[in-house]
Amino acid sequence: MTELNVLGDSAEWQQDFEQRLLASYAAAGLGAAATERVLGDMRAGIGDWTVAAITEADGTRVGHVAVVVAEGDDPPAGRICDLRVDARHAGRGHEEAARDWAERWCAERGARRLDIRLMEPAGELFDAYGVRGQLRARHVGSSPEPVEGVTARPMTQAEYPGWLASEKRAYAGDIVRAGAKSPEGAARKADDDFAKLIPEGLATPETTLLVLEAEGEPIGTGWLKHGHLPGATYGYSLHIDERHRGKGYGRAAMTAGEQATSAAGDSVLMFTVWGGNEVAMNLYTSVGYRIVEEYRSLDLPRSAV
Figure 1 (cartoon, rainbow, N blue to C red):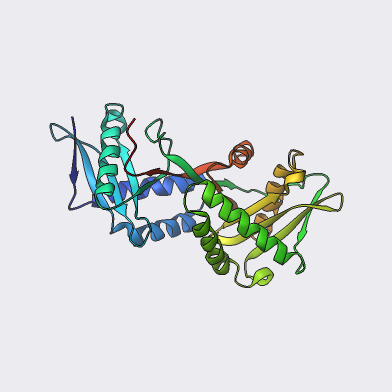
Figure 2: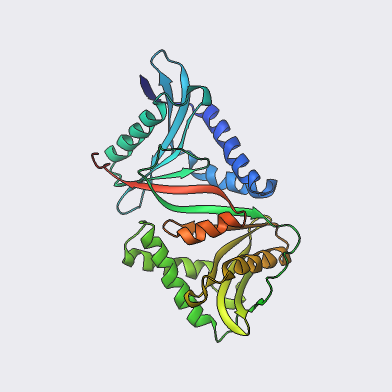
């Protein structure tokens, strides 16, 4: 039998959680300054989380689960911030009991969707939760060699408006496919996010906008933000036009992104790949980009099986 008891003092759990979070980012090649930035951002909201101890009937503590229902979301969304059972107690049903408790806790507080961020494989525990996205990262060493026949050049001012409109449509479409928002909500989010992320267009500081070419013909584009975290570039997109896909250019786009990362003085390239984009997920895996975090979600209340 598993029992869940909300803690008044969660300091012990927080210390363990922070260590695991740091280890996940460090394993992806991020340095101390970057991992500390991630930790600082997380700490800003951790005071709102509710942490419960997972115990056996005799009172033995076997793990913890942390939950929160975010204010301002419409409809309200809950989040499992952490769920961990000690390895020596795993496989006895504690994980399922904690997951079910978290679902009830969030539903009782008005949540109509439950999100979770995974830092390590969870087996079948969250199979019913659809994958909304993955944060991928890889350490970039010396500047990679370009792919023969493919070049990357700076985007021109004439090319920028068409690129911007296309990127917004693609971004909104990814959000909808991941089940995060309605088409209308996704379009609004795209407008808001792009206004914040690239306010000065081609002149936005620490930003690289590329056009990829093969045999003198444009085949795709790239958008990278340098110093997203200390020493880390974030790739908002490395896109190959649909008519040019299936020719190995996806790897060339990744190489161009890594070259730009290295040229900017960063040593890690990071991406978010949205749920449903299996082609991109497979590409990132094949070129060595590890999953740092995976985001999943489930509609509440859970449907009866």
